[in-house]
Image (cartoon, rainbow, N blue to C red; front, side, top):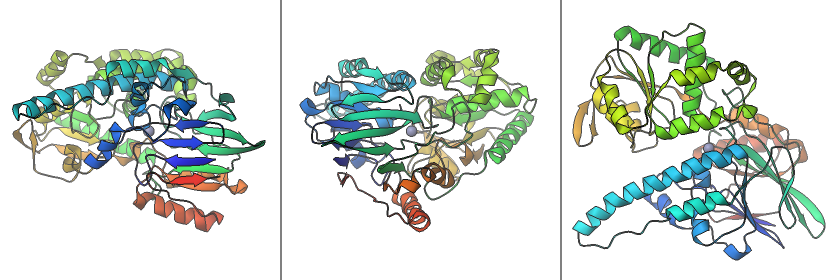
Length: 463
Ligand SMILES: [Zn+2]
């Protein structure tokens, strides 16, 4: 069999693995590229596969960089199943419909400019029909059960602990009467993350594709992060300032709501209004609440008596733009959680414009901020920013809390790998920049005597 990487090879986006055997072909993930223009240009192309001979697609989880190119399959008339856990199906439907909206809005602006310039408009990469068709092909698979998905290929999903419904996958591939196994870690969460269960490692495999997003470091312990979080909030309440949190809609936002709820209940934080100013995050949170079977013990306990649901009901979920604008008129402390996570678009921009110049405001950055984004400039400590063409002074306090990451740190990655290591599998490191996957490769070489492969875009690995 041959496995070719059409994304997340030496970087962290565009996950897509094409697996070809003597009798079948399947894809594991089919995600979008994010970041540089050259990377994003690849979003117009599918991995080079004959659609008529593609038997199935399997998703590890619903983040856009793992499912974003699926509509291109429908556009090419792909009609076979796309397997995923039920929660992944619900969240990817939400994410894909949102990405269609984003595409169309961006395109409208771009094409207006092009037309004024006397140039032809740019065609959309995919249409509403493609998104709906592809959602229609999604087929649920249960955790910890073998499902036959193509001639000679079975798949089993295990909890990956990253976001709701996320999974690591084990493929059992039979060729010429011999069965071999290939494990894909997917994006792995850290042990002890809120809401979702801890990752469940597989115990045996011939080959493993291991993510390496944080292959070079560990996060600050969660306890320290939470103490810092609480103290920032208490200080801001003392100053009567607003607390702004730019956040990704799926995963991080639900973790934050969970922490707020548990800290308020324990009496660590005073009460203040919380605004969830993101229609997508509101929908994603509802999906989370519909899947108590995927909660860890603590969350199960918190949701048993309906308390978490009640706390969620107390949060002001602002759906319309009108409601969003009204938040600015509210006096005193409130917390505003809004997208985008890197402050390069979305409603958070309005709130930053209204509050960045006030010294009593706190901005809490909870996620990775890519080079060139407004969020990154704030973290870097600039004194002025430009928002909607207006020069805004940065007088607010900017806090960076790295401990909220949805990805396992180096030690957690190695712990997960530990249970596979005795089988001496072929190790392939993916989903990490070189500065992260090289140190991880070094440790795996030294500790286990295994020599990891570090493929680039379009490279194949054979087994
Ligand atoms: Zn992810």
